[in-house]
Length: 183
Image 1 (cartoon, rainbow, N blue to C red):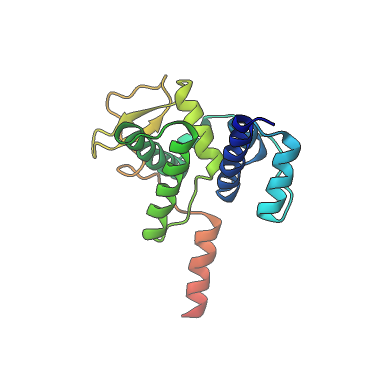
Image 2 (cartoon, rainbow, N blue to C red):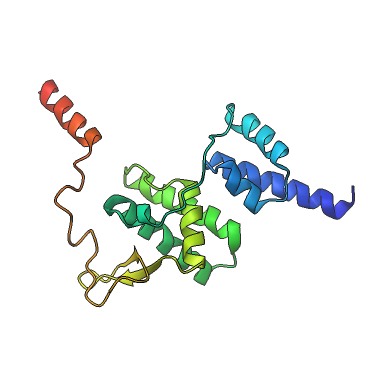
C-alpha cells in the first residue's frame, strides 16, 4: 500500500468515526469516504457497540417543511451557510462543524435536537440539488427552509405564525400530565 493511499485510508477512517459518533447512517459513510462497506460496518460496531440501523435514507423534502423540523433545519442551514461564507472549510468538514455548532446551540438553550446528522447531511444535498431553498420571513427577516416552487413574496415563518397544533405532541402531553399528577 502506498503512503498516499495509507494517508487517505487513515483520513477516511477518522472522518467515518466522527460521522458515526454524530449518528451518521452507513449510506452517508459510504458516500463521504472511500472505505469499503464491510470496513464501515466493522467500524460502526467498534464505535457504537451495535450494528448500524438498516433502511433507506430520507428521500423526501416534505419532512423539512413541517413546523418543528423546519425550525431546526433552518437553524442548521443558516449555520452551515455562515461557515461556508466565513471559514476555510467546505464539503463534509463544513457539515460536521455546522452540525456540532447546531448541537452546541441546542445544548446551551436546553433544547432537544430534532435534526439528526443524517437528516442534516440530506438537507445539504437537497440544497445542492436545488430541491429546497430559503426564503426570508416578512415579519422577522429570518431565513427559513422552503420549497423552491412555492410563492414566497409575503412568506411568514412558523415562528411568527405558529400553527395551532404546534408543540402538542404526545410527549408534551405526557409531561404536562406528569406535572399535574406531581402537584
